[in-house]
Length: 293
Image (cartoon, rainbow, N blue to C red; front, side):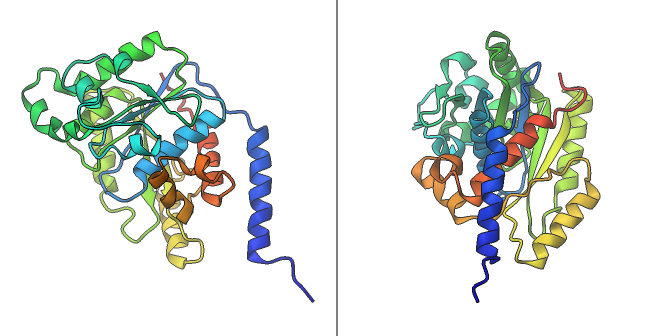
């Protein structure tokens, strides 16, 4: 006798329920533009992937999003289909050259509602060039706030940080109101997290009053392993108020999408990873800090 209650059929049913929920869901528009840094000094934790897919999920949900690529690798720009060869007006020109954000942003060709401030390899020299620049910590903040003041239709700014705690990341932290930290569901998940937390607190105290961690997003989780469950349990026990309910699963489709210049949401919208990021985006829209500016 056949058994229809297989793991695959159960997952398909869950996906259909989640898709139906997302179609009915109302994404919360903030009263003022939220500026969110997506940061973790550890590489390979899903930081860029989370930035672009959260942006896509928010845009599909009806919000207007600006993605600022602050990583010289430019992977966020690539995943959103934006051309960014060396010399392209970019985040480098905003931070170092004093360019207006207005003259740098490009529309995402595949998703209505997303604008992108791209990054180029030029940004790799910014750490050295910023050393002697006056008011070096505030360069991105000044440009971004000027742009947001004249483009009030932007609901959320997501800034993809480089995998370091250098001067470019400092610029991002000073420009942001909130920090979202992607955490890979693996053995060393919490390693370095206390340092990042202290950095956010120190910047909030000295350079950007009100800056706070507003969420932690578990990524690349494999529910078939005990390790993923243990890491999730540990993160939730340490940060119960900050951890997203939604957990991003490990998915081949999520990994494939950037090679086609797409997010997983446009690449395979019915994939479990695409649905998870849309749910996380919905949750992000509803996780507005009480004192958000």
